[in-house]
Image (tube, rainbow, N blue to C red; front, side, top):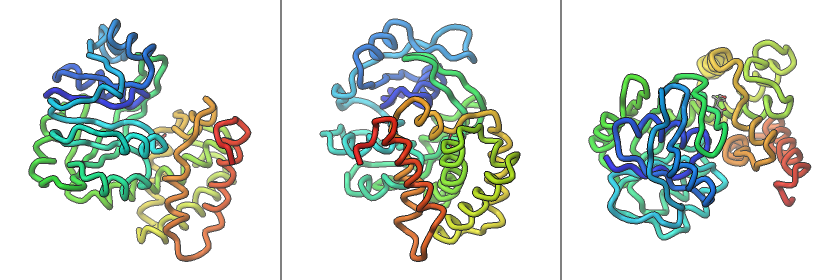
Length: 293
Ligand code: PAF
């Protein structure tokens, strides 16, 4: 397949390297510096003996003629992305944390799947990524696509080293990932701790449990099941720094609004712990000069 990958952060680079082994991969990025590094040197990933060659373009150069678009940009870049005049001859797979993008996506009229990523990945430079935890990608059709088409796409993308699974229903898939992110990400970012602190620090553990309870009540999920899953992910990704901690450390806007903010916006009862973490993360963003107010 001729695949366009939008965004070359850790997940975009990881997907580019693995998919580039079997498909014609074109990376679409914002900066000329990153474009030229990718075009000249390909993607370096420790799992591969040599860099994986890819084509590279600026994101403003997207055009028709591709078989699939994989969108790996962060939530806060989604509004601007969807406002562009986007090619509509191929389906899109959107791989964002949180659920804040769904409404806009529905309005866009694009043929779309949404997905969740359970890999640990760390970008080390404009064209280098470290695969820190082997997981999988799950996708489900969202708008204007038949399930059979989504399933066929997942089969074409799937390999033993880079598994891509098809899910029949997008909502439970996104909700379960949202619970993981709304519990682990803000706490690890606020306390500058790796993911296992959810298990090893008794006070962070208690805050995590309370966030999980609030989120499960809003999303109508079983606390018992979800809390077990959160603890399992905190253990399996133990040494990882969550994406929110990395955003804070590297002075970038986080995805807190479409993760914890999504829970807060959809709650019908007071959610004091989510209220606190949204404002606490905003405060860190403000102090780092990436949030205006
Ligand atoms: O956002 C992240 O960092 C990841 O989704 C997760 C699962 C919390 C692991 O670090």
